[in-house]
Length: 417
Image (tube, rainbow, N blue to C red; front, side):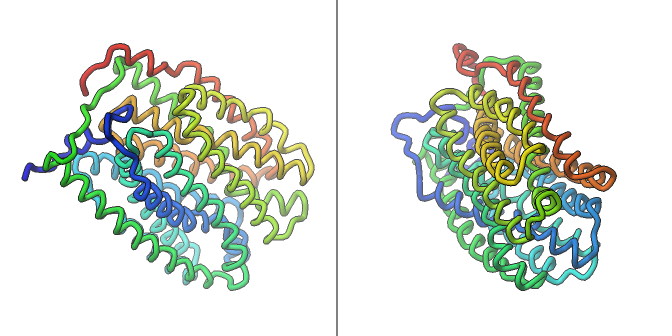
């Protein structure tokens, strides 16, 4: 049997469009979306329980920001390293192993007795996410049948739906039982391990089929862009994602506190309103991918990042009902670019799915976590209202989208990968 190599696997994931006879494997896409849902339910549990941890451990906003930083550093900065490693040597069964890190982290979080143990627990949960995302994104591309925007939307909407469900579940499971109630979410991790064992089996079988010649790898191609153009475009894309994640970190970490302090909302109602916002994010991700497949990814990127600016600028100056309505619009519009940016980068760097996913799911997300820590200190020195007013200008970075090249034009002449 021919040896399965990393180059073979990269070639199998690099096609910019569907080749003849290639089909979308929806059972795998749904399984990877479900596992992303379960993974991100547990990830979003952490910011959702901040009000509980703040009271139990008498934390200030700066310490809340440090928890977010520790969680997102492991969840993000490790991802590019995992992506590079799996580009060279794909690891199908690393997926359930990564979920096991999350399981251990949740159990530790439910019994943590000090601020230091909280940091260790959230770091383990973040490490599980770091292992999960690069290979899961690769599986989504392998199963896409060339419909890369749709596949990434299905994959990412699972995560965003999980992110939205976390605060809702926290309101009804963790809030009544306190910190110990977090242990119930270990059952979610166990379910994720089972789903990812199935995904890993399909992935391993797919690689064996490619090696045996039952599936022909698609020749890796890249647009005719210079190295300087590629580097510049990647910097722009990471900057755009940074603005997106920085703003999302602001809302995800401090929205409940903002509602409680500004409008005297109860903790449970604040968590429910956070669920409404995160639900709109999930819908935006689902819609954005197919729109990018149909109308082009540059259009979606431009519209999403810059188009949300008027709404973010208005948010800190309105009442409760308008705040809820604006966050729904912000979630829908801002999230629509997520899959478009990722697929655009994958098409620009074919055969580097793990690296691209690690950088874009990881590095930019980590910068958002760093931003959350800075914003926490700033909120302690000023106010949450000031922080929200300052972050409202972040989407103006969307103007950089004008410098993103048109890949369809660049493919008039392609170069072998």
